[in-house]
Image (cartoon, rainbow, N blue to C red; front, side, top):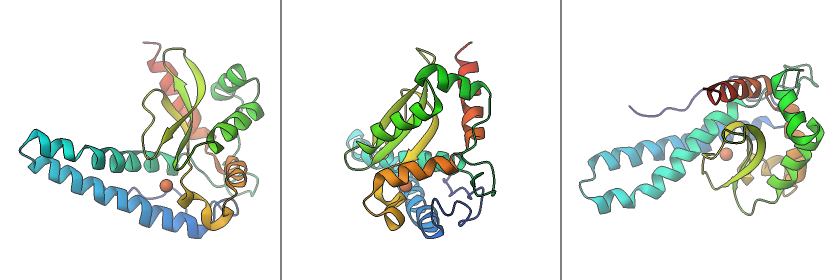
Length: 204
Ligand SMILES: [Fe+2]
């Protein structure tokens, strides 16, 4: 079964002024589509591979493009049009289990965002910043992954693409401004749903 590009749950210009229409269009239709195509090609080649050596040679392509597809599929859902712009609920974190867990782990929502941005800005090269749920300690933690590696140590609650293709056309080299802006379009409702599911399943 071939992988396909999932549609965005909002228009390409819906995250403006925080993420431009141009970035969203290119990011979704070009970058994500390329990961999907390359993942399908790698899986097809893997299915035809007849020796361990051939299969091993495909591991890097599977990891990179599979991770790219997983991460971007999550990223689109993890964003929403901004409440500050009266376009949606992006950036609005209501009182509830996620907010409580953030305050418990970081002292305040602002501290979490500060720690997230500092840790994530320090990624060398390309990667992803995460607010993740650690199923062992049952707390929220900040994590990063290099390249297109998906988050495997934690359940991803919020993921932010730190590749230059995610911000350069609008924010140029100022990654910190992109990280400050993106909190205005974070879909905290989606994040809360993921958190509730993650904390419920770890109670089993
Ligand atoms: Fe990306």
